Length: 195
Image (tube, rainbow, N blue to C red):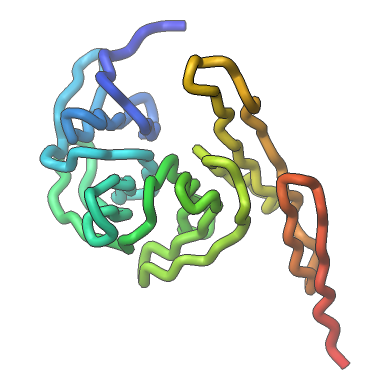
């Protein structure tokens, strides 16, 4: 392993070729690091969680003090030149890691709601994919359409582990099938058949 940069209190990183972006929750910054040099490319966004990049867009969640200020944001630019900031959606309490899918949609782990969400960054539409999770922190999908996500473990007030975290896989559903899988491995399928 090679240390690349001091990252403060970081909850997100996104690669850009040999360079990368990372967030600093306390400082409210998004930083760009290339060839050992780190620069702040965006600031004044205290509470940044998650960071994902696709093309000339950076996406991040911001934990605010109320539903209006808890937002999923899109920043447009490249390298160290970022400017246009747009709110995609708001009101998702404790947004965690973001992931950009090949289709252009975003996956988001929503910790408080215990859900994995898919967000359309163009119109802000939010689709709930999975519910009843214990503090999910991240979700990704692969080229086959499988979904991988994790749950955060919990500890008692004295630090003793109460429940360990878990990593889950939800296989891509077959065509014309809607599949819901809960953490207790119950699978319910609804076949959508044409008559």
